[in-house]
Picture: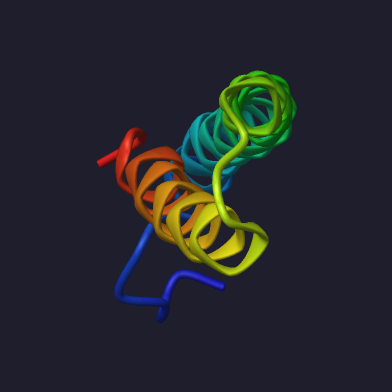
Length: 81
């Protein structure tokens, strides 16, 4: 197979290296997302309990906790970039 314009061994090495790098980055992104979501849940539970103790209006408490959840989730998603 001397007619090929590229070296098969070099191609295998490049694909293996790239594949391992991609796999590690993917695992790190998944771990960051899962851990971030757990932290968001803990923060939201704390915020909701504080708002319940202070006797916030339920509608306002739900609205504020939804805004906080959305912003924290956005931060978790953007954390790996």
